[in-house]
Length: 390
Image: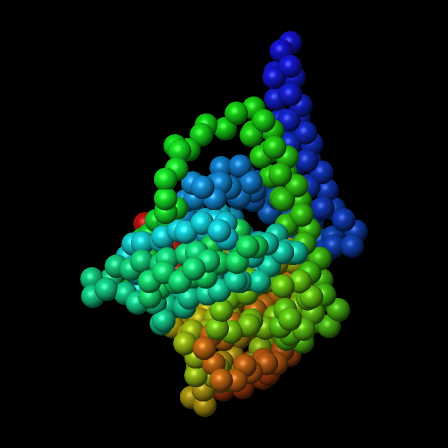
């Protein structure tokens, strides 16, 4: 057997062993042991194999970057926002790059130059641009210049530690807001993209399996910090020490919840005046729940407010007939996150447990929805998702 053959066989075997070992995270006794949680842990590992390969093999060359999406309705982690389209590309802090295209109409847009750091998605941003500050031509086109030295009105400054650019788009109205269409290029002469050889493949596979296991475990163990005080809303900065590329313009607040089948959780808050806000429900692996066919999130466009401005969210396994129902989907525990973007104050919601047979009295007079309205809500979400990726 040729030495190259032996090396490739070993690399592939080692990669598969790494995937197998990553799957053992789902059975860690320190993490939730409900069968649904274990299944979801394995599912997250399987879902994110492609993302790991994208980061560490297929799109990891800062000399030939491509904008590619991170998460979608079937690939999730790290408290992904169901309203979002996340794009990113590898860059370095020394070269110059340009992102150009059509701005689209997403309610919220932010572009960050991310430094390496202690989380699976790096550390703090070297700089950022938000959509309201982005200069856009009358026809909707734009250019962002990225590099260590000032260049043009839309300049995204990099540092020596910069290794990635990330674009967040949050959609309020899923059906009508249109996503950005853009590409990235490195400025200057360059050789054509090389075809990965045996060494490139071996190293890329090794990095991919390592990143996959690290990321799945990191987010589950981080979320467990909120579990120590269930029902209390706290920000990442209050519980985590690692610098992180958080959403510019407002830090989310998160609470852990547990929910038997015969109970419901009532979450109340008066939303502040905001550029954008949303509420999302997720499982113990810090990934959003199914938002294709279930109501697991809402936002400033879709949520119903009571006459006094109060937002009432009900988390339950069965439809309670209220507008802002978030479907627990059979999970006994998980998280709920509120994102307030562009606000003067960041209110902390309250969470109250109640038996299902006492829910009506706990809610008092409030708006109700019927089965036909509920079906319409879900169909609107499905149409909106097609709009986002078409």
